[in-house]
Image (tube, rainbow, N blue to C red; front, side, top):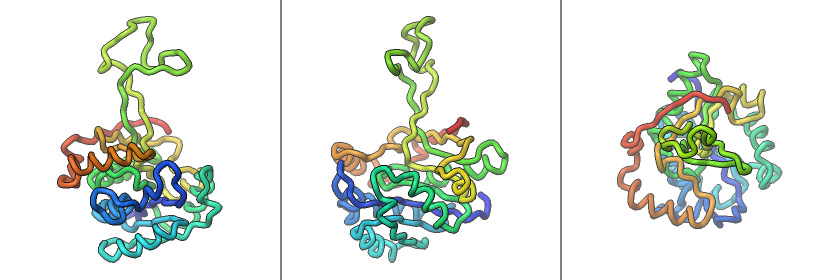
Length: 250
């Protein structure tokens, strides 16, 4: 890693409709739920220098004040204007945070990715730093990998069916699915492009289950079950599955 300052950013707006209070609702025995879990995880990432929580939710503000006293890294609470907290305000939020945060590198993550563990953040940030130094990539984003039969508008996108209609799935080309667990970019490039990734993003393949995203009530319940059965007592077992890295374009 370089000596660049790395700021982990967690956006936590109020008003979740599909999972009410999903950011702070108790999860896995944690009082402040997914937010508490994510802050604890980021606090253990060596490459992260500080954590920003950007929110317009008073409940999140209270939770951050309660949690950060037990953490070792600085946790900055950004009171986000409501105009940057609407359902369709992501682009405006990116622009707002790019000019608000004083840092070298922005690592944008979400509390709704509870199984993207400290070792994965560390591996991703190391990979990003090395790629930037070698000029092989200008940013990074985490992805899930699918090798399965897939169609779009009635046409195969997974393979050329005019050759072999049903090839072995392991022979299919990989399809990369953005899981939104992590986006990494320099603050300067973020300002320039007004985006969380650049034009040549390093794709960080996320091990099975570690890119799990909570967006619906059923996923919240499933996530809590997975946490209790797989992750609670093995808080950083990402190396058990192994993380892979590939190159591609965002």
